[in-house]
Image (cartoon, rainbow, N blue to C red; front, side, top):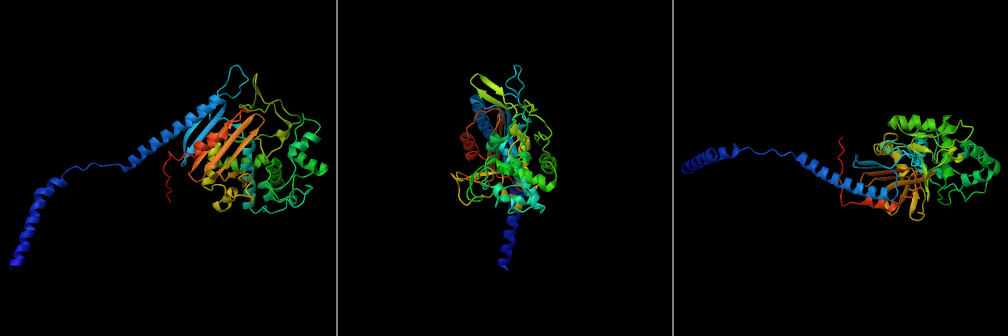
Length: 395
């Protein structure tokens, strides 16, 4: 009985304590902390610091000679986009470049040619190990497959050297079909044995564009527009065509002119008879459209990941000078998890870098022959001292 009374007394004491002291505690206003705002503020600071890094880098490059447009993105967000310089440097009244201006991609066009081939593979209209002569029977070289063209392992001769030797009228455009006919007629000596070695050569991607045309019955430029540009909303992208031109125009009719740099000053680069060849070059695009394409690759919009990932796999068993080549993309042992391409042709230079490891993207398009050094670009995109947190994927 005594034990029971003690328990009752203890319960009364606890209840009284709760009434007198707990009421004061529970009536206090507890401040509401928005945890998301802390992350947003932190992200904003990181983004601002990264933007400052980008602006310093490209302002310095502009002062050193870069005339072009830059876009940098990280974790699915565009952090920096800016134009430096002029559309046509030869004019007295200069027109400033704009971030949505289209530049010639030069060799960066190859990533789109490869994507076109991969789309046809996904539809079962070709196999990567098909002999190219299945689609271009007049090709006089045996044992060359679609995959060897994609990986630059065909051993074929250079078409520009062949055209320089055998094309008599430089005022008349040299086309993909003219290239194939010249190969059949002249049979220039190949550079090597098929699949023996990695040798970067523009003829590989020019022939791939012709494969697209032979399979689909469409002009290459129309196929890219219908199957890549329009579905992705790449409204400023196009392939320049001289298909119906009887003569080479003085300049490519585009607002952003390419320029050669001389001691006496910049001069507009004149159009060239080799600009009639597609697949290896001659596509035009903006940094924004390139970012759209990058997002499409990341999110498997055009192809499922099981098929798209092949583009980023090394195509050669041996790495030549620590470099390798996938389907339209370069890769380097020095920069793992990065896939890139640099281009230059007739007054234009370009660079596109995808950092798959840190979800970063950089595009630089320029309309002069100024050879901007790649080292600062690598240092910038590889800098992990300032990084946005990895974006969450909601399912």
